[in-house]
Length: 98
Image (cartoon, rainbow, N blue to C red):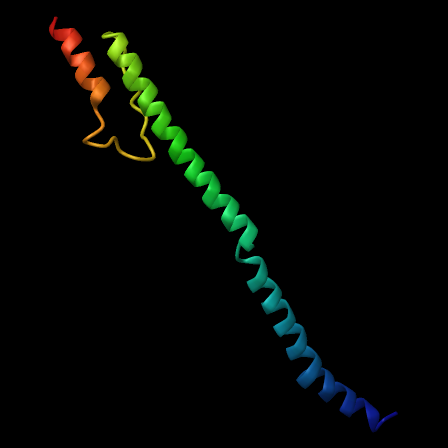
């Protein structure tokens, strides 16, 4: 048993300890990234939020065209209003001029 103890200690130091360290390093790297399914879900949710934001902007322009006293909220949008898509703003401007 006396001759086996140093071999066992060297085996634990040079084989067991590095294996344990590399095992947990790879586990941490795996848990640090999102799974592919979660990334796809996140992209779908982002696209949905962008479409809903566009719809809200359209509804606000329609309400502003119908009601000249309507004031749009000052919240930030996900996407800026497009320059070529201000049909309802022009209608509201014509109603104010009358």
